[in-house]
Amino acid sequence: MSVRASQTAPIPDELASPRAKLVYLYLTTARSATLDELQNGLGLPKMSLYTIVRTLRERELVEQDGETVTLSN
Image 1: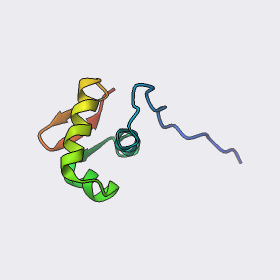
Image 2: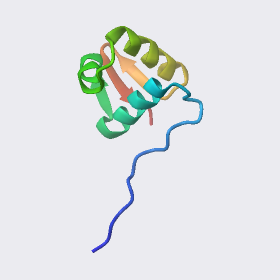
Image 3: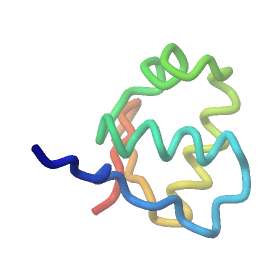
Image 4: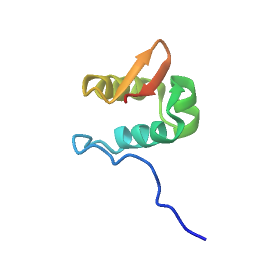
């Protein structure tokens, strides 16, 4: 029986904010989520999520289509 290491991507070094790291890690497992799903799953205020997602988009770590946020390839 073998044990495989987790296949999640490492957290990018440019993410200093703990909340941005949390959103990024959530998306590494879910691949995509709506802002409502992020809010419910992480317990973060929606206004904070808008700012975090904008930062992640600017760094080309995620893509956003309406309310859906997807981890960039």
